[in-house]
Image (tube, rainbow, N blue to C red; front, top):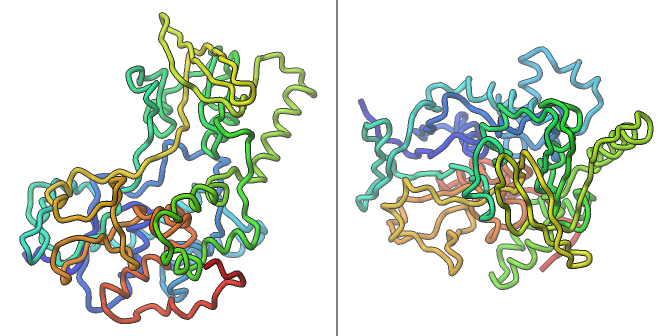
Length: 423
């Protein structure tokens, strides 16, 4: 059995699935993607009925690069008999559950290329090819694509207390949560924090005795999705951003945070209406609070309860809050997987320990130019604010494939420039 491939993908998350979906229609390349999961899922632990996408459904796995691809969201609707019913919903965005169902449909239609229940145990390089150990068997590849995803960020104050009562939102503990008659604190004022707060408010895990949301931002700030801000999520902006010195890039990405990490305005409207009805119409007497511009500095366990020590950013006061359950919606961090540790001495890192990335999403390294290491969701510092988002997912996958094939397989360079010149 020939286990050599032109490209092997490490992980079958959303971004590697996009690469695979575009490769599926690309002749002349042998590829396979592996993941230890049983099937495709997309943050299933924090998939709530009211969780909505923040980008258009046209920014799917393939459409921006190849609208004739059989794995477009539109074709999914047609194949499932949902097209006309979907159109009648008059929506610009869809729920995250709908997008996950679409991605699962795509993954189920590529069984010859996508291998689940397949753990990549190590990756080595012999100067001519990559050698991968997968489920205790050896595979080789000319090129690899790292798409192992982000990892949940657990703050230092919570690491020693992690368990069924103190946990990150993306955790199996949320599936067994019982908030009935408990004092619940949600830490984190991003979209996921708000979704957990609202679902808890509605009694998804039982009705809590009290409920607080602690957010480090000065307010529950909305996502900025106005047209000129959305130009940050266009290929021409990425091209301009790439030309900047790294000393300029990091402050720009920080400044643009609310272009990608704000709360959906419609969701804020809905949450505010919920709170108004609950308090001023139905007269709910429970202690329900939103505490912005506050940062949890430490936490102690006293018996079965927890005390959170909080710094108030408005008046610099020290505050405390007591809880039975603490849910940490504290985001995710880039994680360089341990499986590529044998390659570390060959890879070029910057002063902050990040991959140094090339334009076509190649990792800069000391190996042969014939062997390439591609990486997805590792270059916000290099390519800009769009890198962790789905907005340019298909375009990025096409960039990788064009580079891999050394020809323009996908006509992604024909997009007209933005109206705004940034550099």
